[in-house]
Image (cartoon, rainbow, N blue to C red; front, side, top):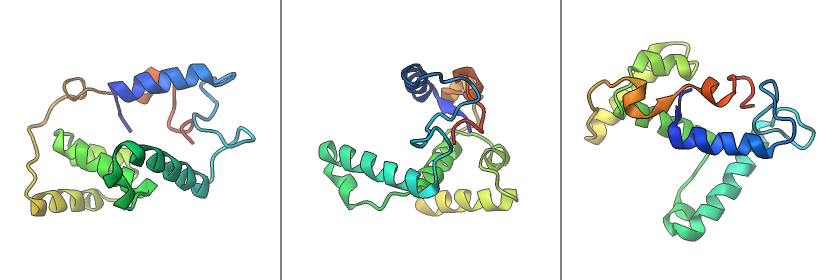
Length: 138
């Protein structure tokens, strides 16, 4: 999955804070340094949403899950002009038809899909430029 430049900057700072954060280490490890379980990710997201809701109370009324973040990211990428087949690969969809559902939802919502831009024009960069592989996000 590509990263926004600001996200990449935050992740670089986070990696510096982690002890011995080599490229083969998890970016968000569990207490033992291993891969987080789904429930752990959901719990952490809930804590982040609660903290954010202190400044943005409307978030407290929203249902948030890791899937919500995934769907929102895909929608924003589509709106930025990233090709749906590329997004299908990033999301590991078995079929581009699954990603096409996002396009249908966008069209039915009245949102416009902008022109196609390169990743550099949209501010997206590769996770590898932050020193991560897809396996280390964990």
